[in-house]
Image: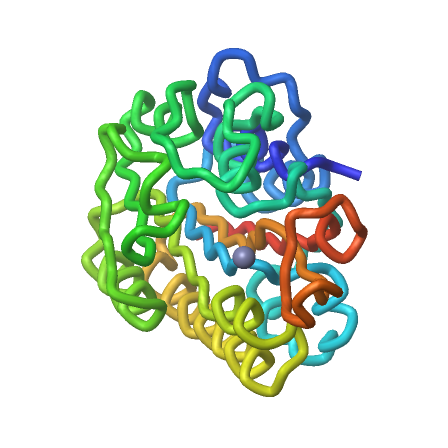
Length: 264
Ligand SMILES: [Zn+2]
């Protein structure tokens, strides 16, 4: 099984730019194979990443039918292993540096600005215009700062979606990372399968569907890829009776990533 740090070399391979220095994780072969078929060895031009917090593999298995709206645009499925400990800054730190936690330095729930090269540095160096769209104060909003990319700090998930839609429509951005967190927020307050949490999870699926429709429409002329990339799963913490994560249990560690690659 791939570790989530394999996302960085995968994206670098799609764009045919060098991975950040020190990255030894392997790109995801299934994605590169699809790219070979769709793009015939020519580099990708546009990428949309949707990053929904805490959507684990077990949630996929429990609501498999509802993932149809993800699979419609992103049919390549890859089972992935979260970084350990399974906290959001540790996991997205690994995903977008290509490094294990001991390599990027975030090893607990903390949000320092990363000092090592990231995927976003590699893309910016190659002249790609990158936009990072996230909720104010969250891990994704903070740990990738101080790069030559555009940062959009939004009030909450719906604002993130609107911003990503606007950026695709405007057409001046090559790579968009849109992060959403409502499912994680709600399941921490309740449980991972409470009606409120499931409603939030469904809003993530619906957001991805709307983003994927714009992706297919506004970026139709480009060699493009779309990805649905959660960071970790969840479990019920026996001490509190509420949702949590951070352990090495399969519920926390197993996630499923979805990709789609398209020619013009
Ligand atoms: Zn959380």
